[in-house]
Length: 337
Length: 202
Image 1 (cartoon, each protein chain N blue to C red):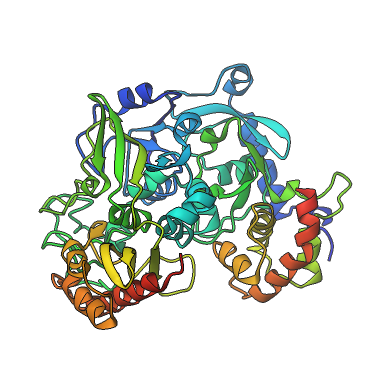
Image 2 (image 1 turned 180 degrees about the vertical axis):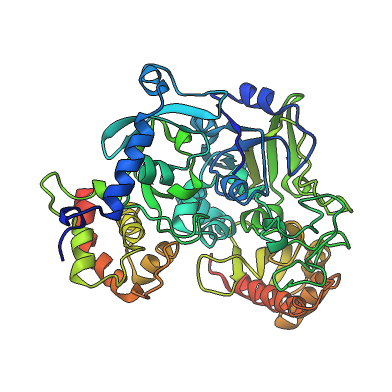
């Protein structure tokens, strides 16, 4: 690990000041915020991230770790831990897809450490990104190429990729947030703003090193999940190589508002398949106003994966993604509320 | 088997302990640092107090030092083990403010003011083993023993954090601790044996 300056800040204004000179959305910014540290410290040890300064924002948890459930929806403080949100009885009851996306992620220790803010911003697990002995990685070294295209890419993304990067977004929670139309409250040098969680992650666009749309010095302080007719009938189905403590190779966040046998509204997020937390909007609209049969689910799943681009080792993913979504849809329909 | 420390001649642990102690004592800044607040110095070092197993330790370390390295290399608490050093194996598991965490992915300097508990802090003052430690012995919950301190810290937390109701829960909440020897079934049995006593104690 390279030497760095360490600073602990006690309020959000100091945190913003400490980070305001970095560039927008830059993965290798010279100032990095430290919350749970489960991504940052790991990537600093691997020499992938080499910040000059680490700004410890953990003391902000006294103000930004609340979890509130009300008639308008759910508000999750960005410094709440994954474990705190996963274990929250009202989150489990009213937003099962969110609770499950957290319960099925990482390990007990990591869930006790990692915060919701950092979880959404976690970096890809692409082996070529994580190992600087590979010179070609557009995400780590802009313009250097992509070793995963033509390399070992079994775990790489098939949706939302381009020729510059096929890295997979590894998280689960952000997929559930995106499915539920969640918004992020941000604080930065220009004041506060609210954006959709979906807009936080950038497409590769030939600039894979730009990880997100946060402005310099901007922090996520909370997520808002609106109350709606579909949050209770929701689930997160995660398919992985082992039963626990593993990233998804395909996952689906599904929420349904049913009117008898007919779908009134539907929300679908896909994980383990895409470059960023993925919302399958076209597939959602196909479900509305019709009974949800297995045949309908299969048709919807074909649409959701229609844009998939594979690179050899990950040729299996579109079919796995389709089957995962069909099963998730049928299980969600069958839920007893 | 004889205790390593009672063997004649130098042992690996005695040698490492003595060398590390010399390293800590050497910097003249240490005595001056005792009254200073926690602050990262411009020379890449930080001075701070770490509370481990109920005792405060004033340290002056390279800012990069992880909690695991601070425990093992500077406080001679070598019970917490370094397996992968990347948060994937759980051998370094300790408790911070009562929750199980990975000390290898934690900066020591970031833990000033926190209550850290390691495997060395589980037994009673008279050396009586924690019920979970005894249960691992009773059920042969290990073979080589390298992952065991982390397994036991996770096991105690699994119970105290309320996730040891069913076998499936125990397996899920213990999945962050890998055991190369494959002692998993016996670890589940040990946790079930110590469950009630651990609830009363923690």
